[in-house]
Image (tube, rainbow over all chains, first blue to last red; front, side, top):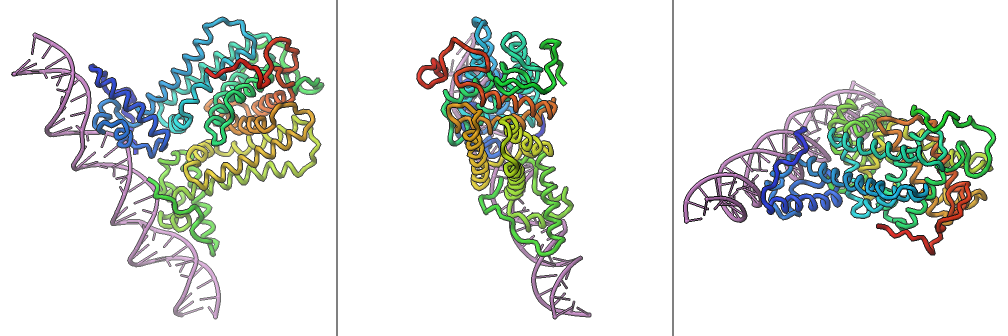
Length: 231
Length: 231
DNA sequence: CACTATTGTGAGCAATTACTCAGGTCTTGC
DNA sequence: GCAAGACCTGAGTAATTGCTCACAATAGTG
């Protein structure tokens, strides 16, 4: 199938405008093809055909098929990261609900373009070590950032902010992904609201309890503060 | 790649014990191979090799590669459905938390066997119309059942039980899947607890509020006036 | 214009894959 | 013991795929 690892970096730097244009055509064509056919059936020849260039040209810019998907994924991750980071730079003192909403909204927006493509990327992505590393780093950053926010915010009451952060990040990403890509798609706005409500109520609920009701049993939360250690 | 649709039903009924045994070998071998190599790289020859039978025998039982994955998926879905349904038959009057836990636990248990395989199945599955239908039906059943439970339980306070049910089902399935398969896996028990806590607090929280705390400000989540435009 | 560097072309190769088939070996029923 | 079916075998085939390479076209420079 795919020839072995040969690096994922693009093959050459374009020196003329024409080249940069071709590059872009390849990328958008690949996005469509992968989204429509999946990774395995999305052949390089098909991509070239869709981009209206020859297969040879394609391989002048990308050393192999993986590299195309890689670039697609990089761009997506970068876009997502930027959106969230830009939000961070704004005025900070939001309510917790607004903060969570600030997580959910960019993720939703980022998935509206082409849910199918995202799906393909996450599916096949982790087979290449470089992609795996990139994704893992991205996720770790998000978790760390989220954890920091949780720890800083007084409203938050969870035992282990690390676990909570992972739960939150995963939930937002996955649920948005699934429910937007679903055939019977849920209204975007409602999805955002419900997701935010769920996470916010989780974070602010009394630890070990289920909702506002007092729950006498259960091992109490370690009073040592928020610095609960990840397992 | 795969030859076109030719049905997914097994090719023949085994009449001797020997045959049933071979069948089982194929299935377990396929499970391992798919989990290890993914669907595309998990070739039928490799499966046959691992099962220590010839490739010809394999094709006596399954008309094509898809059919093997299909059977694997069917079995998984059936197992999951059974686990939940068996729980339903027990004494009903549980607390909401216990009900949600009754959802989460079988899902977790079902994923502990081989997360990678599950991943492959969900990834590739939806390409075959028959599989797609099976999965969709399974999901619809789960959502319907969940919605019914939500409506019956007095503690639940959500606007739209259908949306809530979908959210709950997706969240449990996806988050469990992701966090168990993750390289830095979270402790199973803690995962269950946090997940249950999140969902329970979401379901029991007063609509429009976030958690037990009284929240004077903020526009409610009523459809009338959230200033929430998607970016 | 001439010369060079950059970019584009597409037939075709090597490798891989799902799957077949002609013929073997084992089980069963009598 | 012996036929008839059930089961198994594995070399081979047709099709597909990622990718190369020898060459053609275009753009930049003097």
